[in-house]
Image (cartoon, rainbow, N blue to C red):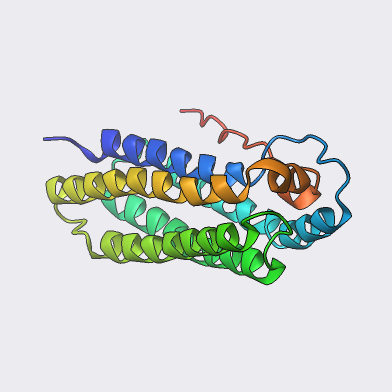
Length: 197
């Protein structure tokens, strides 16, 4: 029987895949040829994104911080809180992309719609994960581990789905324009401080 410890690590690893998706929002910086309309769009879109991306990173770091935890109740509380943070943050990201309007590029409207849908789907998926973690039996370590493992498997699948829609939105000139905006620039994720025994 697998204890909660290796499963927590799997959950943390799955989430770092989800974080990669958010960092896709903060693509690599380069010049888009000075398209003022596109720069204005990116400024508008990125204004609401930066704080949400940070919240998601912090939530995922919190989940990673209990990777070595063997007490089911503590894991449940930490993960539940982090999942709720992600529900709200992905919803806000979807709203930021929605309210920015379609980027002024070919297929901009379609790509925007797909990205908004992907972010809303992620928000909904995390709501489902929160419900599931809240319902796990912390009194039975074996059952708790099994439930946690199933959640980790589902998180891995989530990241791939959303990555595709966001990659399309952020490809080409749109991605370049967004990369110039402070709100969309990569924030370095610092590892949690090592705890001394």
